[in-house]
Image (cartoon, rainbow, N blue to C red):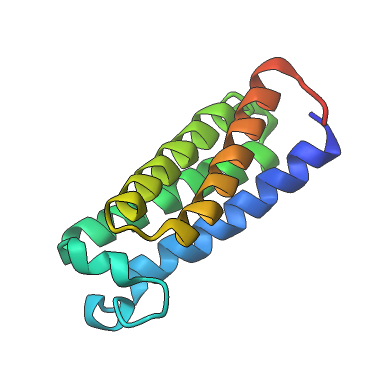
Length: 125
């Protein structure tokens, strides 16, 4: 795996770790007041926590595959999971007409797919 793919993998893992931790640690009432998190008003607190668990699970999969070579096959699955979370985020922002937020989601989705493709094919960026 190339250095660029590894750097993107670490970046995605850090992003998803922080995002998932915020969703799990902060109380729902406080989380939905954070700027840029107005989307959470459309979801129950349990759903926001579930999204946090999914994000943390994908991040753990990315980190585990980095440190344990025996789990290298986990990388594309974690990356595809991240891409699915970002696709859901894009759908939510599209429904709410928050088009600016979709740009960031599209960027993270694209990076997750690059990592998945690179891990499956040995592609070097």
